Image 1 (cartoon, rainbow, N blue to C red):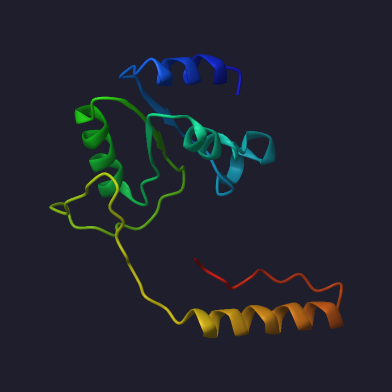
Image 2: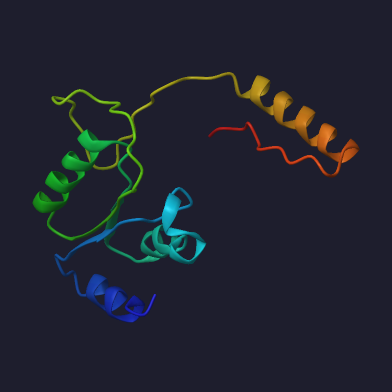
Length: 135
């Protein structure tokens, strides 16, 4: 990130700038691997005095922009390109520092499934398996 020094200096000076990064992550599709910004979110999380948002759908993205506009400090919003399904109702309330749980799952079961796939992969090295562990 070429602007890292300027972003960091702005943050320690308590600027109220709002950043938005789009087409980031591994789900960018047709843009190809040269366009995968993977370190953006990790970088912004290390900068002091910056609040980071990664909305999961259009409703949460709209609320993230609203929260960012009203926040008296620097904010980074990472948006995604894919057309994700809507998870939240239009009147959903979001707060900075509060998470929302969409689905509770049995992590022991998921771990067992992942270990099964790893054993299967070690017996058949040419088989490619995507991990089923979801956090």
